Image 1 (tube, helix red, strand yellow):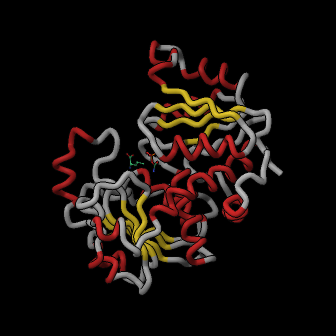
Image 2 (image 1 turned 180 degrees about the vertical axis):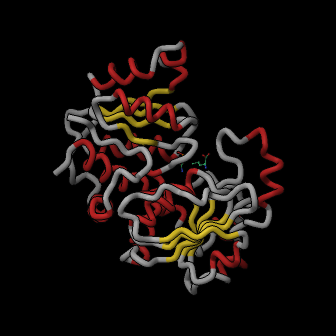
Length: 301
Ligand code: CP
Ligand code: NVA
């Protein structure tokens, strides 16, 4: 049987995503109630650093009764030239799913092409769909139904922004993305077939946040972008989420950030550590959302 992968988020239907978010809320209320991974192991391969993704997956697999096998790619034979194909074939004989964090989308696509078990994107250059699951869970906790919700993303049009757009539109959200020239998301985002929401691209952050119930931002210098760090900080300097920007959004709007944050750059310290954010809830929600994802992919009801 062909395994179900989760590489961009567009693999889910809107109905599946709804069920997944409801299930994540149940698992949040009762974290040890599922033994969906009893007797199973999950490989988690990191080609880039991670704090939240590693811990939320490792603890989440454990809570589901499974065993997480955390692998740093530098310690694997991949680092000495073993083919991804061979790695996929071997891991498939041992584990029920493979998570991969990598810099190149072609790498995860190749691993998935040869894996007999589900492959989960734990972040690539273009996508961070596990983060978007936690983001939607956080919005659902705050606002209930996501259909028609207007959320702004301010800053670099990167993997986090793209995944918010892909999964948010599947839920019917309006995702307004404000970025400076040269840092925008592409016009022709390949949104999922069932996407009923809307993505709008803006230059002006104040225009994007008008009527938004949440204002999201991410780092200006993603992993792999370090060589252009100063140029990026200059270009993105006017795209900081601070109290003034939140004041221009809908009443009660809160800030979101996938973390790690750089207070004073893309977000002010006042907002990051103040009452107008749900950022630390987002970080927790990674675990609950990913557990629901693992149940769906590995142990479907
Ligand atoms: N948000 C996120 O993916 O964090 P890490 O890089 O720490 O995993
Ligand atoms: N856009 C960031 C997200 C980190 C979780 C990066 O790719 O480095």
